[in-house]
Image (cartoon, rainbow, N blue to C red; front, side, top):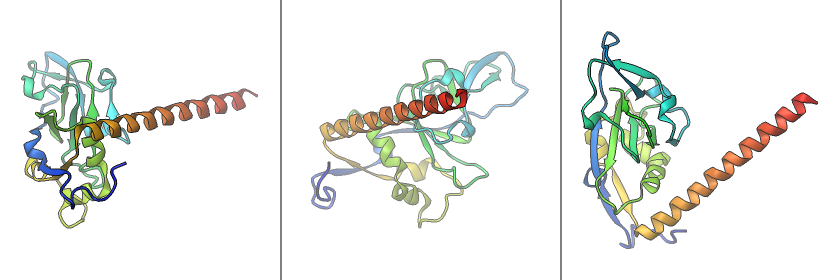
Amino acid sequence: MFGDNPIENGKWKVEKLGNLGLCKNGMNFSYEDNGFEINCLGVGDFKDNAVISNCEKLPVISLNEKPSEEYLLKDNDIVFVRSNGNKELVGRSVLVHPRVLTTFSGFCIRFRLSTDSINHLFLLQFLKIPNTRKNMAGRGANIQNLNQQILSNLDIPVPQIELQNDFATFVQQIDKSKFEIANSLKRLYNKEKLS
């Protein structure tokens, strides 16, 4: 889809992630807080998801007051696992479409695009590439903790927006096909079970 290495031949520019948007560490709260209930995206909710569209199914936490806007997730935010006891999970990312008021835990970092020069789905897929995860870790070792500085310094290729949009459409078609196949297998399994 992209041809020869367009970065090496200068066809694509490369930007630091920090030049494309803003990072924000998640919210710390106490289980003693009380009064304002809100859905909260935590590390345990990432699993193998690439996109989380139904935040209303996320756990509900209680806070003393409504969080400020910077702690509320917005459509197309990308959230990273910042720290976790399991090093394999650190650096994982999901794209969110909240639909309901949703915050994110202190073990996460939210990235919000501030430019329209990059497609959020293209960016998400790039962030999930093993080499990108290695770059987050430095010399390829497992990431112990992720911070805003590491994220902000990631090199992100920025092809023409048309190419990014084509790629995003392709990814959506693949995801739709995977979903349809999984549903077909589930129906087949249930049919056999009833026989």
